[in-house]
Length: 244
Image: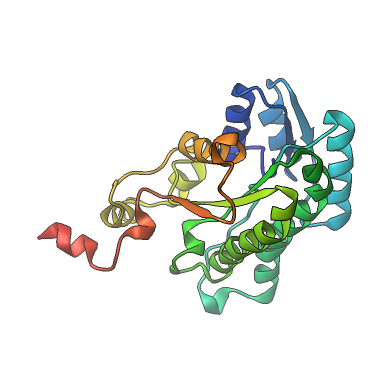
């Protein structure tokens, strides 16, 4: 489980623990990782940066040494900087791609030998921004769109080994980060275009991910499920129609 120290990642970790799983919690933020894992049982906190190949290798070595096998990989780690195109320089572009896309690729490659033995699953976390374009997301949205396509590529190549690969694309989720950066007018704009007119919860995201790792989704692979309150399904003009 990458990006496990806080927010959605920590909630996913807790949800899997409640289902009886053991979890390797990977995060490059050591302070938050220790804080998040402090009172949890059956976890292995691993302070690594998944954008660095050598660190991914060490992460896998420690995980296998501790647990002996891997049944599922959740590629949740990601970063975002919301800038317009003119302000997005190559350094910003590469930083986002390195964690969001390169990290997902590196972790998936590293875990394949173990997943071949367990016939396990990979779940990648993209975003609704990977399914529909939006302002200030030229790097972030593109990285998430690439993750969605990478999911399909992995599913095709790993199907022979009975490894399933799927993707979750969350819409707006109620986290501390979202609450701190979403001004009231942004929240109103979101709710106007979302049929369910509310934020999702971290628990709802965790439930969807757990489903894709479980036997209940045994015939599902290569898919992206938008957990977004209908955001991706809504079309241009919905707010105006509602106002009438």
